[in-house]
Length: 342
Image: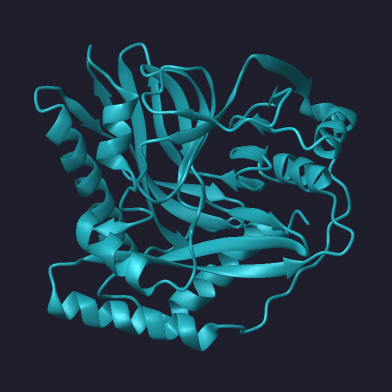
């Protein structure tokens, strides 16, 4: 696999290699030209890479050229101990404070704010970083997307966006962040519990708007681990003979776990106030083979490959109960998830 990926990199040909949660099987889709394929209705087959901003044309790599590999043949290599300083701390804290003012002056209840962190790695091999991510985070969806016309991205995301199969939709509500000591359960504050409830209710309302006659099953709130971080998760399922990935994507994206509540207000705040372009961070991605069958994830715990190394993207959900310095610290912890693989 490594030789194949290096050959594709050298030829500047698009490819994506990925693994599903709890799987040791790596899948590779690759192209024999550098064309940027776009889908508008998800009627094709391949690997989707949707940006954060709304669009009607989604990049994808077709699955025409498809290979599989066994992850167990590729072991984790030595990684660096990346430490983070307080670069841009005041700017991020000021942004959180601005969001808190927004809550007091509007109906907005949650805004997810993000920042980007350039990490210089002089001798980094992206393929080795991908293998490290796959070995470090067996329960995550791990991928390495390489395309000369979109840029290259890599990540290990814990969040399912939408799985469609056999007329059933499975999505999740994921919010709240905590760190627990080994063999100890995290203690959830009112802030995290409120944030999780906001996300769950918003997703349920979005689904009811497009499937008003379908039963929606809301699971119980669970604690799940993603690396050294814990989150609150609720499974949400819906059955319908008329499931459409296009309709679902338009209704759900961006979910309140990466945008906010209400969607319109929070997105307006993000686009006006964040200093960077999120590009594919907090978009959604994964394999699909029709408008009715797909397995897609939210693009979290990820980084964009840049000439000097990586640009790591992290965010935090801000509510009325947020403490700005705590939210800053949360973004630092989340950055370590990706950087542990470098």
